[in-house]
Each structure stands twice: as structure tokens, then as C-alpha cells.
Image (cartoon, rainbow, N blue to C red; front, top):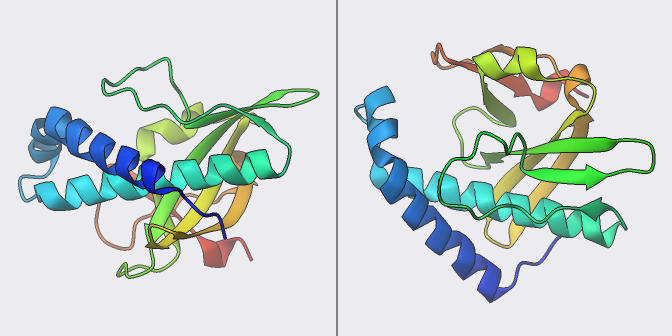
Length: 166
């Protein structure tokens, strides 16, 4: 298991609070019932997972970029972590599901982003139990993922399920 430092936990929490303040209006336009505390928690968990994946890659001697903590959305950043490989570069997208989620071991993506994925896009699929208990379940090529409609109606999203990858 990857250990995050107290500084990393604080940095991720502060990032989540600020980015939520900047984006809560957009979230509430898409979902009027969106709860600000849940949005903060979702951003926090996502950023913690990115750091855990980054540390895992570095521990395994991969040349990886540190996750961005930019507060403004930047369309030029098309992934969470870049991995510089010997023969090609990989765009790694970190996805996390909560262990206490109603739908177990599933990860969401905006449906309109799936057609843009290619052989250089990979996903790190993580399970969050606690800030220092994030499990990296799978790192997989986007080309090997079966994206399906969500089990809970969310028309703009698609989901992948661990059970489809075993």
C-alpha cells in the first residue's frame, strides 16, 4: 500500500476545497441536488488517488509527471499523469471508486470522451477506503475497457466494471 504524507493529505484537501468553490456552480447546473461537501470529498479522493498512483509509478521506476494542482480547468491537460516510455508516451487517467459506494468496483467517464481515447490512453483504476488506504486495482489500456451505460441512470456518463476485466 502507498503511504501519503501528512503534507500530501493537507495539499489534496486544500485543493479540493478551493477547486470546489470555483466549480460548484457548474456542478449544480448539471445536478441541482449536488451537495457541496460531497463534491469536496470527491475532488479530495480523486487527488489522493492521483498522488498514490504517481508514487506507485515512481516506486516502479517509471518516468511520470506529478499530478497537476492547477485550480483552473486547462483543456490542454488531457490526462492526470503523463508517463514517458522508451518507445512511446502514455496518458494515464486516474479513476477512483469508494469502497462504500452503492455500485462496487465501477468507474465513471463522460460518455463524450470515450471516442477521443486511443492506444496511448490508459486508466489507473483505484479503490478508496481511507486517505492512506487507496488500492490500485488495475492499470489498463483504454482499448481493453468495455464502457457500458451506468447501473444508476446517468445519461452523460459511461461506466466500466472490474467484473468485466477479470
